Length: 248
Image (cartoon, rainbow, N blue to C red; front, side, top):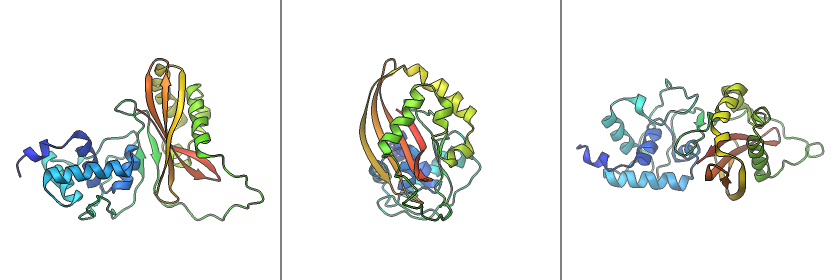
């Protein structure tokens, strides 16, 4: 085919198609990019229309053929294993949601403006079965918004060690406290003090094993101006643990 239809794709549509080639479906692409599934499906529909194909995976393969090398697929995230090859699961349903043939960790890079604050990881492999906690001895977890605010306030204060302790086991396994502190020190202080922070919304993302909660805040910084902060949490050991954070 000619290059013209591919030139019509936006960078965001290409970014989404590259992840589809790697074996993601719309839900895991949404988690990876910190967006809603609705937004990802809109990107896929627009890409299919521009390329005149009925399958999102077919559109992704066309982009891959044009770009010529798998190493160009997807946006590299901090800590990502560039050598892992995903298997194309065949044509995706028309809404862009397909099931890949293999499971693998989906890593979330935190983004300042257009690129990342972070190396944050969300592992989608099923957790080992655990006995249910005793209702008599286990206190209910604080609401997710409170847990997200508490984490952000630690970051605001430059308490890198304490904020690192709020991450889940998957993140801590992949990223050391020293790495988190180095990245945070480079990205967060230049924004200045928090002037205001308002919860915009909370969305449940249905990923294995038990789903995650994605909370968005509109935050105004003294130097950096207004940003949208996204904190993604899951339940671990009866408490909310952070698996992703973005500042955009």
